[in-house]
Image (cartoon, rainbow, N blue to C red; front, side, top):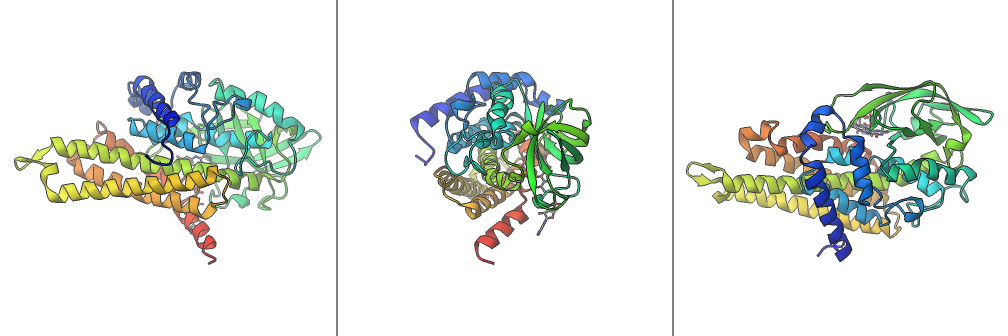
Length: 397
Ligand SMILES: Cc1cc2nc3c(=O)[nH]c(=O)nc-3n(C[C@H](O)[C@H](O)[C@H](O)COP(=O)(O)OP(=O)(O)OC[C@H]3O[C@@H](n4cnc5c(N)ncnc54)[C@H](O)[C@@H]3O)c2cc1C
């Protein structure tokens, strides 16, 4: 029994596992080759309530909290899915929370409304973007990172100049998950001079004149997750598409980083757990010099250490997630949870591949995909080094 293990969550695990077995596993290799997951998968996941987990029913979600979202993420990977699939199918987990919070529809610290009561346009944004996305009929993305840099969020250079009841947006974004398929992009813009740190969030529709989706970026891993460059040249965005008040974007981005980082931490320890399972199965069946690999003490101890790393990372991530869900301000602990889980994952996927020998290096091996997919987890949502900066600040350094 762990802190996230309740009868309802066990049911959620079963639902997720059945979904992955039926709807994902027969097609995942094809989607990896195609470079994206089909839109129909969003509708299927929405129909059984998976897409809406962690979002309140008042915005079209299925209810549940951060811990329920973690259960879904964990189970997708443990039942043979991948972190790339999570990134592609659950991009709304990073694209929507700012809209939901601005409309005052969530409780707790994560959902705290920034800058007073809901602004007039915020309910309208929920109807136009949040509901259809959670129903699986729209796809959203979150665009913060720019070609000049991603770690220094305050240095964003994409500008939005006010012109009557519109903003005129100029700039570019890169590495945007689901950017190729997205119908709308929650976009961080600078509403003062570039680099001033005065940020706002605008929802920008695909098809708006001047908004171009650039090339599909080819990557080491996360092959089923499309990633794009975005360009904005004199793009006119209605002021009613601004999320919350002007210049509250930086705080909103920072607040919602907690959930994104814990999702990435979950993807990391779950990938490690899955790789322990794969390696254990392999070592039981693979015989060398006349005996199964698993009969050798060196191999057994290696598996034991991998298992220990994965399980201790899981326990710590769960503890921090429970504190976040309870509204505790645990920014430092979230950063530590991400780094602990990513370090566990990096070590475990490497050793799991090694134990598979030559087969581990082949595309046919599931462990090969996890090895490639895992490398992004210490980069996305704030790098390991940026997490260390946060931890050092938390230590008073
Ligand atoms: C597959 C993929 C998907 C992504 N999806 C999205 C998305 O959906 N939306 C989005 O907005 N972004 C997305 N990103 C971008 C990601 O968040 C950034 O790549 C990340 O934040 C790092 O930014 P950067 O690449 O500009 O690196 P930089 O900021 O240029 O950093 C380069 C290196 O320097 C280190 N570094 C930087 N500053 C310091 C410092 N002060 N001290 C010590 N070391 C430092 C970093 O840790 C890193 O190792 C994605 C990236 C990838 C690869």
